[in-house]
Length: 225
Image 1 (cartoon, helix red, strand yellow):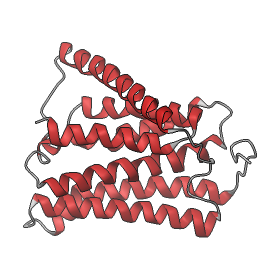
Image 2 (image 1 turned 90 degrees about the vertical axis):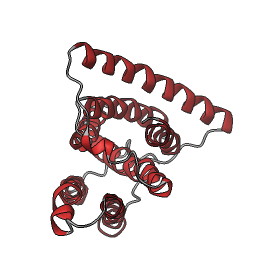
Image 3 (image 1 turned 60 degrees about the vertical axis):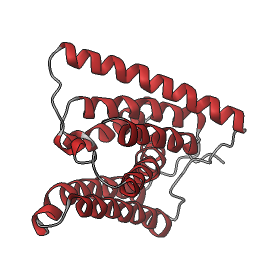
Image 4 (image 1 turned 135 degrees about the vertical axis):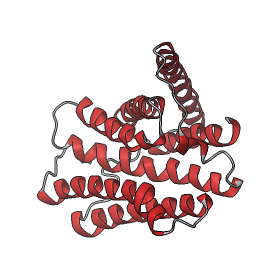
């Protein structure tokens, strides 16, 4: 039975949503402020690695809360399975949609002369390949589990509109990337969050989103300088 159709609103669900947001803020503060302050002599490679490991602890904490406290799976919605051809086509169409939308956003920002170099993005340029790959996997799997897999189905329990959870999740996804230093680093993820959230609402397959997310970040870190 689809749990989105059979609501399970409860204080533990609401507390889980709040907990995931609090942990997100704590992760942001730790990655950007606390860790660099505590270990100022550490290399940027170490700081990036520690921040990604902390994100996995964040995902683990949310999973444990869902499993132990909510007594529900982390993914409330039953995962729909599609054949390989459908998955490949979905990934291609999603990527085309992301590329088109991101291009329009970036062109608009440049026309408004709002583009600026993002210092945080530049830190990824010269890190080792294995660390780039670990960063890409962390984002593709961890962020999709949190922003789409965990949050959207639970937010849906509190809204009649299917768009409200998608918009809220996308806003949080955009804000989570705001510290990367440019407007495009916020609006781009915001747009991607809307596209990914719509797909998850309609097709209930998070694996497609993880593949798309992986490809986007892989291209950004390995092929774009």
